[in-house]
Image (cartoon, rainbow, N blue to C red; front, side):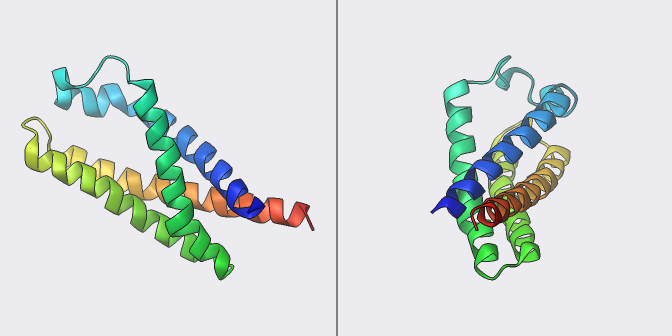
Length: 137
């Protein structure tokens, strides 16, 4: 259980930092020019927190635990990247299909970002769990 909790905490921290950096640098240059008036000036904190808590759980469940089971970091990173591509792809492709202002460029960039960030966060969670496990031996 300690392994799972440490993986979760490390994943949550890594993904939150990565995503805050991404949003902080890309919101005004990539998203706002296209999304214009549908993008809030400030984000809603409660749904953002719920997203990060839920998404970190998904990364642990679908990417980190299978990798830890076989002691395979590469498997964790690949599964994390695949999860990110699928999750972000679901969001981006739905928006592309239904929102007037959504465009191909945002769809592609955001899907790549989702795969990259999720793979990296999965690696952080894997190493966080492995580090805590070694410390407890």
